[in-house]
Image (cartoon, rainbow, N blue to C red):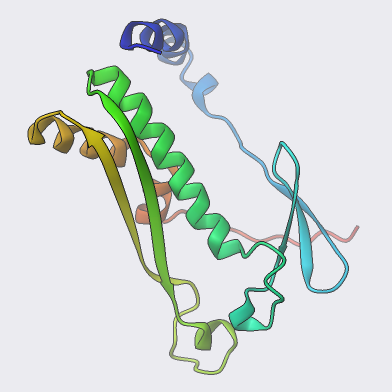
Length: 168
């Protein structure tokens, strides 16, 4: 896809959202069902993913760890965003990879140390790009990718999250 095709694809959506701002607000949903043992079947939209405990918390390693899934979502979102931005601004990225890694202290998750955080202490995102673009264009590409990556912005800015229990 080239920049013109991307603009043509997105132009009607942008026009609609300017005219009807409420149409741009979409609620994404995820669902899972509690499975046997300590696991949850997550509906990904394409298939069922079985999530379970990380081996550092007693898991077998056969199920997906939700921390890994978070990093995978970050890699997917930032990779797609980078491709869209590079197309839009005319930066030729011949090939590349996106890598994410994060540090967890499982003492917090397991309640071993009440002072240890639960969750990632830090996350690092790396783009390995095969491009002949000048550094200023690469800097612009990364700046815009960071700006428009939904998952990265959610992680950086946190969100209001609530919990509700409904008896089934």
